[in-house]
Image (cartoon, rainbow, N blue to C red; front, top):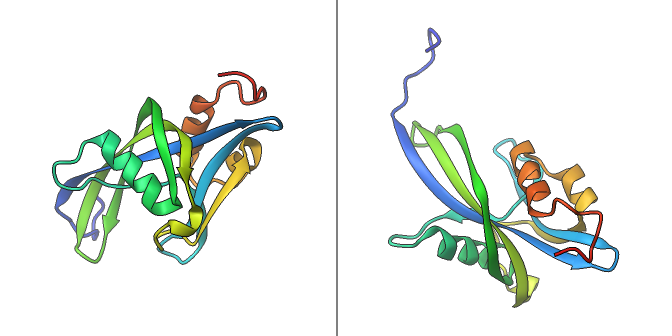
Length: 155
């Protein structure tokens, strides 16, 4: 620990989210949300959120995607878990967060039915999505979700 740095208690946090992809005639598209970070900057990210009591990862991922984007989905496969550390200064706690991500396909819904957690929801061509995403570890999972992203007809 660095001298002079406060020692915060550590807690574990678990979330789940989705990488919603759509193969179109012009290539793969990805559903992203934009929200403000702690510094007030708009960041494009994957939809995700915390688990409700007694909720499993898959159910939480589907619920969070629907709440944040208005899009109803089905899970195609689990892609992986991202973990990272952060300090939430409001409660003076250091968190080790684990986010379980699933590849999903849209089956319905309407972006106007979303909650207000995200400032914007947008379908983007995969290369545009990768270029604007804020977090490298999320970009890696998008690439894993669509390894053949140059071919829209691949499944």
